[in-house]
Image (cartoon, rainbow, N blue to C red; front, top):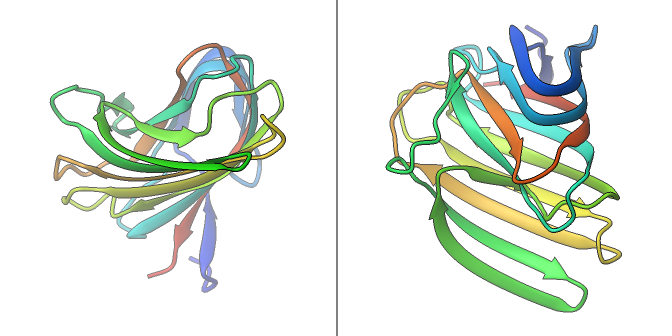
Length: 182
């Protein structure tokens, strides 16, 4: 294990619905026209916390991209096991906030055929405790659109991966997951 602050991780496997998804030689995952993308085996006992970096385009304007924790390739999306979220949005000169629960966490701002990018942090997903989550993203929709989410999950379950699902349409781009040195 490298001694630097972040270590790029390679998923043990990926699964997708769409045109293609591949794991590169360095461990990042590129994907094309996917309506579902799962990264399995990225969380382990080696690290407590993780950072995922995304850049992608979406075919559906006005729809957010969602993310769910998963174990053994099975996502946790039961409506009875909510992800409780706080959200802050900056759009043009308007800043707004909201609090809500959903059976997914939100990853990025409403989709755009333009560029979406963001970073998500997972705190303790492999530990048997409620996972905490935070994401910050930006989109070229409306010139510059910034979205931030914080979430906690209701279960004390150990997860080894996550599933990305656009609320509508499909996404194309690349994601890289890093383990944060303990």
